[in-house]
Length: 187
Image (cartoon, rainbow, N blue to C red; front, side):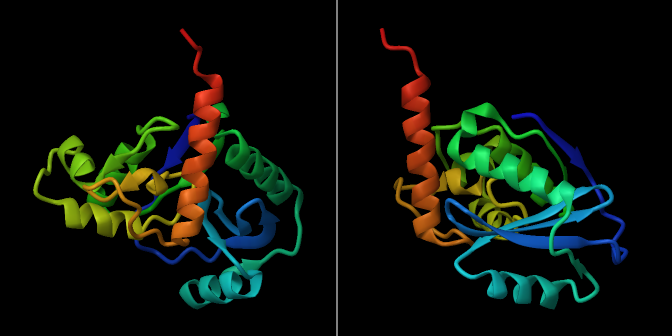
């Protein structure tokens, strides 16, 4: 994936957060940006609930009804949902703690069409006993689809916790599996 990451861990409030919502294949999408990059991508069933939840978390954020930069971002995200193997060329501001950043980087390294368990991710980041902390980092992921926490399953291979709903997690995994199979050469 072609993703540029910008780390912003100053802890200072960012009054320049702009956001909007739009429909996508998985329901509704909320996208928020800072000058340093996209800081939130959220999925939901209702744009008003997404907006309210975001404004409760960031009361000084400015809602933008429509803007050319958001049109480009939405088009890129919609295309990525349908064709994840094409990659995602967006600048992200992930924020997060150093531990969360390590988890999120490990998630970005899971190939399209593949999955891993929370324990697998814990081992990959050098903290083999931290599966629960990995699950917490996944739950704190502010960037749905860009940081693919939907590719993480429970140790028994079953769907488990997804901040944006298990149905969306299953839909994303099905889309990725279908695209991966269609692009894998047959022998």
